[in-house]
Image 1 (cartoon, rainbow, N blue to C red):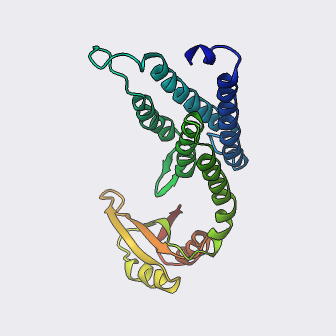
Image 2 (cartoon, rainbow, N blue to C red; image 1 turned 180 degrees about the vertical axis):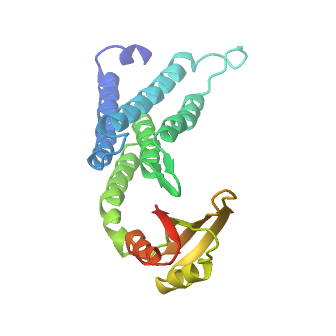
Length: 233
């Protein structure tokens, strides 16, 4: 059977189909990521799926070549070991597309897509066509259609709000009132005092359900006496 893999025949044709399907399904998911300007897009997903498929084919080929070795031999064949290393190794690529900026974490969905692309390649490599195709369709549907539901989901949103205040002025009670006015909850707060200038620095992590509240909130806080600087993110 190994000879058929290296020559043109039914088995080699099946292998080509596996590789093409893996590349196609990986490209479909990558195209959606590419559309949204993600660092891992069309080519990355295609290559990950294709490489995973090829590794699974190699894993099968190793078994076909050495599977008849007697159990008393020092050689031990375990086709699942390559698959296990694919699952572990893809995590390094996924970690490379995850970016953290303050409270904002970006790239988690793309990292999950890369993990799925590896699974798609493995599925086609093992010849599990129907479940792999269905998984691809479900993933593409989730990426395209579920994103449209996000504006209608009433989820918590976090805002980092920093305020610098002149010496000897305590505006903390007023800030609490303003936050309550905008239906914002204080998730975390820290305060520091500059001994030289006497300025007080407040840092709040606020939770709310509305979007783009930073500018409106900053305008209100700017009207308080003693406020020197405002930053929000």
